[in-house]
Each structure stands twice: as C-alpha cells, then as structure tokens.
Amino acid sequence: MSKTALITGISGQDGAYLANFLLKKKYKVIGSDRRSARSVNWRLARLGIENKITYEEMELGEVYEIQRVFKKYKFDEVYNLAAQSFVATSFRSPLNTANITALGTLRILETIRSINPKIKFYQASSSEMYGDVLKNIQRENTPFNPQSPYAISKLFSHHLTKNYRSSYKLFAVSGILFNHESPLRGEEFVTRKIIKGLVYILKGKIKNLELGNLYAKRDWGYAKEYVEAMWLMLQQKKPEDFVISTGQTYSIKDFINYATNYLKMDTKWVGNGLNEKLINKSNNKIIIKINKKFFRPAEVNFLKGDYKKALKKLSWKPKVRLKELIKIMIDEELKNI
Ligand code: NDP
Ligand code: GDR
Picture 1 (cartoon, rainbow, N blue to C red):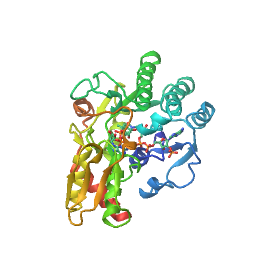
Picture 2: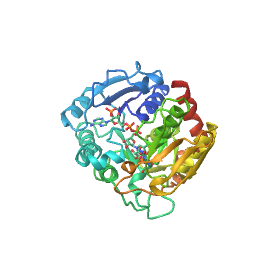
Picture 3: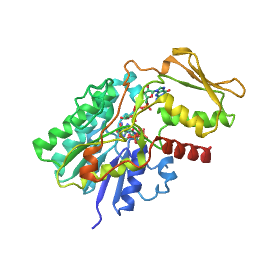
Picture 4: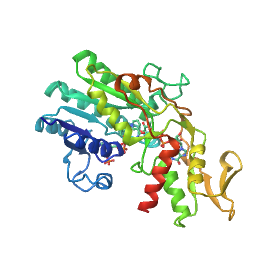
C-alpha cells in the first residue's frame, strides 16, 4: 500500500524536490505552508507537480492548525522542512525565528506524541549549528557553537528531536544538512543572488550586484540529491542522525570566479575590504561591489562536512560538485530569464 507523507514547507526549495522524489516513489504527498498553499507555487509548477499534491494550510505558530492536519490524515512519515530559514533575517526577527524554527518543531513533536507516535519524523537540522567551528571538518559528534538566532533555534529543534527519540521512543531523526543549492533556491541566498545577478548584468538588465562578506567558506551541494538522503534516513531500521555534505569547501569569491568563468565574463578583482570590487575588463565597469549592510552581526566563516556515516549506512554520496552545480544553476537562469 502506498505511504502518506506530510511535507511542511512545501513551497520552499527542498519541499519541491522532496515532493517530486516522494511522488516518484508513489507516496501520497500532503504539503503544508503558512498561507493558502492552494495558490500556485512557482517551484512546484517548475517541476510540473503542482496538481499532484494535496495542500493544507498549517502555520507552525498555531498548534490547533497542526493538530487539525494530523487528525485529518494518517501519516506514515513527516518531513519538517518549514522554518524561518534565512540567517540574516533571524538577527532582525529573532522572536519570530524562535517561534517558528524552534517552537514549531516542539508543536509538531507534541502532536505526533499525543496523536500517533508511530509516525516517522524527519527534522531539517543545519550545518549552521556548528557555527564558529570547533573542528576543521564537522561530523555528527562535533560540538555545536551556533552564531545566530536561526542556528540556536535549529539547535533547539535538533536536541528536542533527539530527546523525543530517547524519551518517547519516537522514530525521530535529524539530517544535519550543509548548504544545498539549485535553480529553485530562494533569491536572497548568496548562490542564487550571485547567479541571477551575473546573468542579469550580462543581459543588461541591471548594472551591478552588491554583496557582503566574500571570504566565508561553505560546503555547497545540490538540493535535488540531498532530499533523497532525508528519505533514506526514515527507511533505516534504527533512528539516527546524519551529516549530509560534499566534504569540499569554497569561498563566496571562489563561487563568483567559477560563475564568471562559465559565463565567459572577462573580469578582475581590485581593491580591499569594503572597497573590493569585481570589474569587467572589457569596459572597466563595476560588476560586484561590497555593501556593509549584507554583513551579519556574527558570521560563520568556515564549514566543511564529513558525510562518511551517510555513505556507510545510507549508501548516500554527493555526485554533483560545485562547478557542475554552478553550471546547472546558470543554464536554468538563462533559460528562464
Ligand atoms: P526555504 O526557505 O526555501 O523554505 C522554507 C519553507 O518554510 C517555506 O515553504 C516557507 O513558506 C515555510 N515557512 C516559513 N515560515 C513558516 C511558518 N510560520 N509556518 C509554516 N511554514 C513556514 O528553505 P529550504 O527549502 O532551503 O530548506 C528547508 C529546510 O531545511 C529549512 O528548515 C531550512 O532551515 C533547512 N536547511 C536548509 C538548508 C539549505 O541549504 N537549503 C541546509 C540546512 C537546513 P513561505 O513560502 O510561505 O515562506
Ligand atoms: P547561509 O546561506 O547563511 O549559509 O544559510 P547564505 O547563502 O544566506 O549565506 C552564505 C554566506 O554568504 C555570505 N554572503 C551573503 N549572503 C547573502 N545571503 N547575501 C549576500 O549578499 C551575501 N554576501 C556574502 C554570508 O555572510 C554567508 O557567510 C543557508 C540557509 O539555507 C540556512 O537555512 C541553512 O541552514 C544553511 O544554509 C546551511
């Protein structure tokens, strides 16, 4: 018999890819978000699956909405992807971030515990929890050192998931996913912002792009591959947490250099600090400049994940590496401009 899954955050990047993946596995997919999710979402439409999902409105701040949805369906699996997920916003809206990204998880876990403790639960944990890293490569047992209200909220949910697993024997797991990107990535996140910005500059739609810290390093993978790992975690005999990453790390500047290279833009970096700029060598015009408003009150400077446990127990490994990911994102951006 086909399984029924709930994806919270269906309108987000991962929600779209996971829904597509589960539909291919013949799941009945219930997707929730905070607004009327019945209005067509561009990501689901891009994947051609907007009519294959049953939508429910479920604001994570409202426990009654959560209970209503859990009473209406008999879920086998719940993927909690909904969150205030933008780190920069979490500094401006820490209370809302804590209410949704931390307490939202508690509301769901309490609902599962009281309504149907047989449901398997996946929590979207984050490499941001490692924060100001205490080890050069981060694994499942590396100590956390979060640097933002977002990361602290995710850490609350991470520990809570573990606690409900040990206290109430729920099949509840966290995937500690490192940054994963795609053409469906939100435009506020740096990879999509860079790709869209460069393509728009190339096509004469905008003059230049403003960014913050170019020297932070991230372990970037491809979102489409990462959602499979979420599903694999819920198919294991024993509930356990896993790191999902590529094991490679690059700076924002490296990312820009690969992208301009693929776009055949002839560029050079000049200046330092807030005056650093990327110049178009053919006409001396500024392509990228720095604006301090994009710097964060506290930064995560370096992330690199070790996915060895996922390889061993889930037989999962990343296939798309950074250059290939940039190519995928640019080709799709050019197609949809
Ligand atoms: P997105 O920001 O693209 O999606 C977040 C989803 O949460 C959207 O559907 C959003 O709805 C929904 N949401 C926001 N606030 C609420 C609320 N109050 N009530 C109900 N739903 C709400 O995130 P991603 O798809 O990139 O990431 C999925 C999850 O994984 C998130 O929890 C994120 O924090 C986590 N994560 C992501 C990583 C990444 O690199 N992408 C890495 C590690 C963890 P709306 O469309 O209305 O805003
Ligand atoms: P991150 O992703 O904070 O790692 O969280 P983001 O793409 O926002 O930032 C990555 C790095 O780029 C630097 N940066 C900029 N970032 C943005 N957004 N805009 C800019 O103009 C800019 N300039 C430089 C940032 O300072 C940062 O160092 C993402 C989210 O998806 C989280 O939900 C998820 O948990 C983590 O990835 C893993």
